[in-house]
Length: 298
Image 1: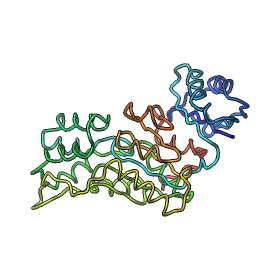
Image 2 (image 1 turned 30 degrees about the horizontal axis):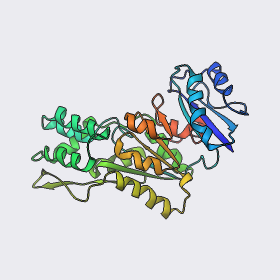
Image 3 (image 1 turned 180 degrees about the vertical axis):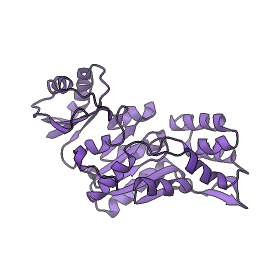
Image 4 (image 1 turned 120 degrees about the vertical axis):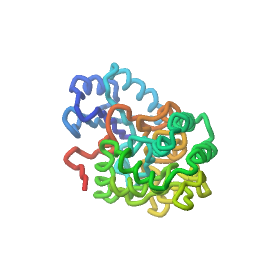
């Protein structure tokens, strides 16, 4: 079976030919390297006889990198170009956790951020942790939502290129977040995503009530959303791509044809198909075989 190995480093470069040569030496029947972006991203196709060899090969590749700051994506070559992208928002498409930033305006950021961290590590059940955190926001002025978005929220590098490039090539792009619709709709517009799903904060009299409108969108809902969009498009599982960072993303990532952990919590990085910890979100385009000149941002 033909597989593809993609080596990716940060936008500043640093992927040298010597590194690529060392990696090729551990790959069975490796083809010549195909540079997707000089010094930044390189594809190598090779033949793998058994799927059971994948994990050992992945370890061999990492060993050959000798600590170089390079991300590795190893996958079957078939269906590399995905037709559906399902992405988490907080700490994935954006650099913040929206609920932590809201809590800052209530003087409670350290307390809420500590709960968020534990939930994202899988140490707390997501739904109950979300209810607890939102309850601490009771009485916060609704206008703070606008302030947080305008003053605190920033797209992670590569987010817009990822969505716009995939859409330009016929893929559907979806945000599925355990956060809040107020932010997902604005982030979807800023990043070029078509659709978003998230939780809704209850508001009364211009104030947050401290409640989330049920049912809460948690890890099962993320999994269900991926399957629902996949089935609506009549896609095979291998034609889907998921990306996220927290424990509530894990079942969605495992259902995707390629599940990518992005600067993720350990439990996610260990179990995802690929772990990005050096490059930006354009790594997901390189992983699909897109060249730098193929990228679209509008």
